[in-house]
Image 1 (cartoon, rainbow, N blue to C red):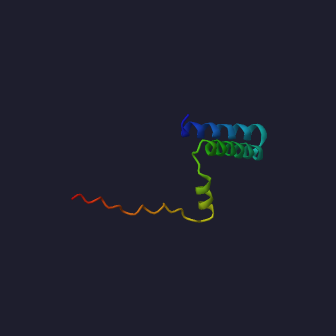
Image 2 (cartoon, rainbow, N blue to C red):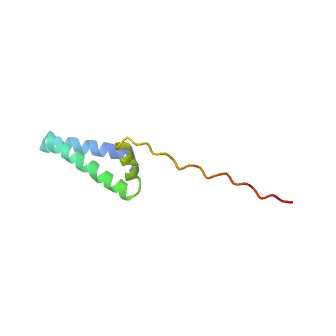
Image 3 (cartoon, rainbow, N blue to C red):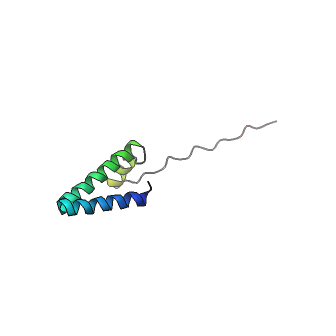
Length: 76
């Protein structure tokens, strides 16, 4: 299932819940689906919690510094 199909399914389920239960319950269903998606993405390694935490706190993650240059051995 690709992202467009998944978004369509969530949209349909939200509207179906809205019609069947009411607006508040539909929002709760959508939030529950988003939470389940987030948990699955974290477990599969698609979301890095350290990076998310750094973004929320406003810190910028910096890549590690490059290794020092190495000199080739001199051949005599």
